[in-house]
Length: 296
Image (cartoon, rainbow, N blue to C red):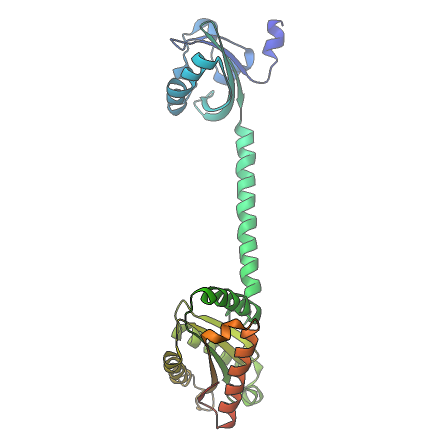
């Protein structure tokens, strides 16, 4: 192969000495890339490779080359024309005391890789955001019915192996239709948002709070027995009454409470049955005058 042919290769073709690392020759691409004249300079690998790559060469590549005679697809950093650091991939072989290098600048490959990583991270972020949005009620930003059911199912799967008390609290705003009729649906939405905020402030991080539908909210209290749940419901009643309506009346809620007992967990339909039990207790609270908690 003629020198002209070698000069046409779109990569750095170099020959260096195995011991003193001196660059013995190189093709035109290497001359232009490194901005050197091999015939007039005493260039060594120290001038071509970054410090980290040079250490990698001395401590790792050189012993392998002496032992095996070649290394393929080695990732290095080359100091290019102007001092810029360019990622590269090299194939190297040892013949007698000479190393023959074929070095391929990989700057565009790394740019593409970074673009792919950025695109993937952006896609993952958007997917996470979309997943989050599909789990939330758009008005209150609480969990929606489907999300709470999914999360509660996971909890039940866990407590079937190791029981932890869980209570379900079903909450309904008293006279909500009257609030909408008297003050408008926009104000009704404001009341729903204020109640959502109140519930979020009262619960712990381990509890689940959802907008169950309309003016109903469902809370799953984790590691909470009936006595503690009743205390929690009392706190809800007190906190809710701090929300004042335009006619100076205080907002109130009715609550139905149901506990998940160990024997309930044998039932595959335990969630629906316990929510139905809490719902019956809620209607009992409504029928008994509202603004109270009843046990299911």
